[in-house]
Image (cartoon, chains in turn orange, purple):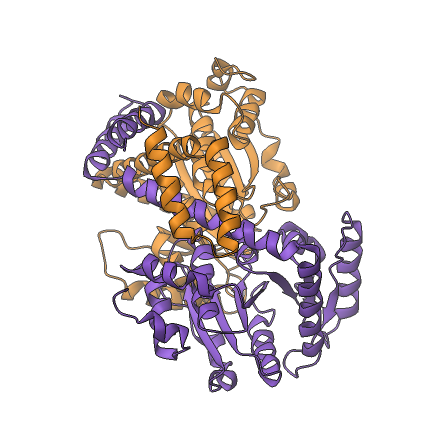
Length: 317
Length: 317
C-alpha cells in the first residue's frame, strides 16, 4: 500500500492514478519506492524511445507526429517530456506542450512534462521510474523527449531502448554533434526541417562522420523529415522498428536493459548509503570542520577522512 | 610528495608545474588529493570570478578583456575555461581559446581549458580544485568561464565568489534567463553586444524581472558591454569590486566560502564511501541481481536492500 495512489488503478490505466503516481515519483514523496517496487514486475512490455537534440530542432512536433502515427496502428502511447534546463521553476514550461493539443485529446495517449528540479543526475532515474509507471499502466510505446544539453542526452539514452537524435540543417553542423557526444548515443539521426536550404549538405556531412566510426553490425542511418507536415514520420517509425528487431535478435535489447537495471540498483544503493551517512551528528561535524578549514585549521581532505572514519564506526550492522 | 609535480614549484608560480598539477587534478591521477591537501593552506587569497551565459554570448572575449584590464592594474590572472558540453572528447575545443592569443602571451596570465569528461557533477569540484592550484600559485584573480547549459552554471556559481551572467540582446529574452535559473545565480548581469538592436529593451526586460525579486541588501545590476571593442569592461571590473566589498563587509564572502568547503568535504566523503561500496564482490552481486531483475526474479528495490545490508556487514571499522 502506498499513500495517495492505488496501484491497481495504475495497472488498469486510469489517467488520474498514472498522473498521481508520476507526481509521487517526481517529488520523491513517501511511498514512491514502495509503489515502484509493487509495479516493477508488470514492466518490460513497453518499448522506450528516446528523442533528443538541440533546442528548436522540432522534437516536440516529431514526438507528437509519432504518437499520432502509433495511434493509427492501434498502439497506446506515453509521452514524457523532460526539461533539463529548468532546475528552478519546478515545472517544465508549457510552450511546446501546447502544440501537442491534438494528441492530448486522445485517450490512448498520456502526456507528462517533467522538470529536472536541480538534479541533473536524477534525470535518468526519474525518467526511468516514470516510464515504469506508464509501462505498467499498459502503454505500448513510451516516448522520452528531452532537450539535448550536455549531460541530459546521455541520461535519456540510458533510459531508452532506442535513441533518436533530431537535428536541423542549421544546427546540423556535424562538429557540434560530435562535440556534444551525440554521435555516441544516436541509434539513428533525423534531420528535421529538411525542406530548408542546406538539408542535403547536412545529411552528407553527418553520413561522412558516421562513416569514420568503427562499423559495428548496426549502422546509424540519417533520415529526413518535415515534421510540421508529417513528411518522413512513417519512415522514422519504421527505422525504430528495424532497430528494435536488430536489438531483439542480437541480444542487444536485453543487454541494454540489464545495464539500465545495474545503473538503477547501484543508484538506489548509493542513495541509501548516502542517507545513512548524513545525520544530525555528521552534518554538525561537517559544518564545524568547514569553518575550521576556512581558517586553515584543517584541510578538506583531513576533515573528509575523519567523517569517513566516523561513518564506518557508527554504521556497522 | 606527490608524483609528477613539485608542490614548491607550483607555489613559486612555475607555469609547467601549474599545468601539470591541473592535469593531475583533472585526470584524478594518483597523488591528486595529496597534492591538493598540501597546497590547501596556501589558498584563500585569490578572488574567484565566475563568468557564465549561453553559447555565443561573448564570454571568452569578456574574459580575455577582463584579464587584460586586471594586468594593467598589476594583478596576476588565472583563467579556467570549462566546457560542460564536451563529455566525450576529453578536451575542450580550442576555437574560443585561439581568440585569447593576446593575453596568453602575457606571463602574468595562466589559461587552461577543461572538459567535463562525462561527469557534470564533478565539474564544480574539478573547477574548485584547479582554482585552488592557481590560488596557491599566487594568482590574484581567477576567472572561471563556462557555457551555461542547465546544471553547469550552478556548478560554476558554486565554485566562484562572484558570478556574472553574460547575455546578448537576442539571447537576452528574460524568460529564457529565468527558466535556466540564471536569475538565481547572477550577482550581476552583463548585456554584451550592446551595440546591437534590441539592447535597451533587453536591459529593461531584465531590470523589470529583477525588480520582481524579493529585494535583499544587494541588487544585481545590468551592465552593457561591447566586448569586441572593450567598451564597458572597466565598469564590469568595478562592479566585481563593488560586489566583493559588499560580500566582505556583510560576511557573505566567508559564508559562501564556508558553504563551498562543506560541499567539497561532503563530496570527498561520499566519494570515499562509494569507493568502499563497490568492490569485486558487490559488483558481481549487482551484475547478477540485475540479470535476475530482468526476468522479474527480484525487483531493483529488493536487490538494492540486499547490497546495502552486505555493505553494512562488511565495512564496519
